[in-house]
Length: 306
Image (cartoon, helix red, strand yellow):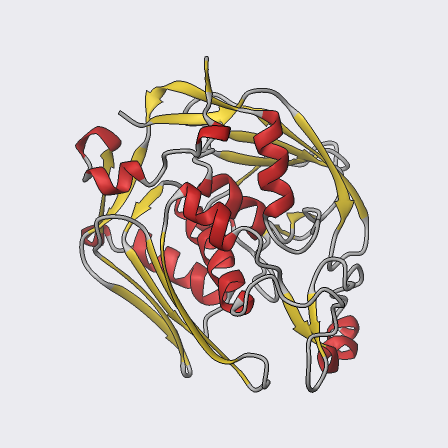
């Protein structure tokens, strides 16, 4: 049996929003079974809670945003990716600003923080979304699809006109341990030539070499270089997991993407949820053992029991 998880205790996070440039304080709290992931803007006294779901997503340009207008939380994808990958499906998050802190541009800081905080097991079984038939979305030459598989697999291809990236493809078979070792440390990235354009749009006000890989016309500008030779496509997989987590369940299916981004990921989630014949929700106890075993935590992160 694979049980739902939450945090063993509350934990505080402080950091800068990569797009807003604002210093943000965030507190992650334990939550009851079946609560899901919820965000509450504490700087907006009467703002309704935002549930992390595909239907709640608003803007998807350069990040995934929950909500619209003033009551919104931007750049949720890295945190959601880590929560999903550690099996943390019930967390109540208070945040006093418009954007989740970017930390070092990857999920590594959140993994470390949650490892130190501790994970608690709840007394209710996890449920999985099992894909039964293919669903696909596309915009121009970009596309994303999800199809049946015994566990979550991400097959990602990116194409950038830069000598350090060009075309990269990686097939990632999900497990908690694989995520921590292969995906969680991969940082977000951008081109120096795009900085002025993005700033005119009100984006990347908090961006720096401390929280993103930056490339000039020829090379990586970060003095420490890359963490992985193919760090760029690994980060795309991190983003994809965060966006797919908005289906609201652990997933058994193969997600294949080509030149995709947050918008396509959200389109795919919405289309899947709007196609009842394409999926079913089942208890972990009725699932293929591969999908369940993928959520086994490394020894150092084994949960305490409530």
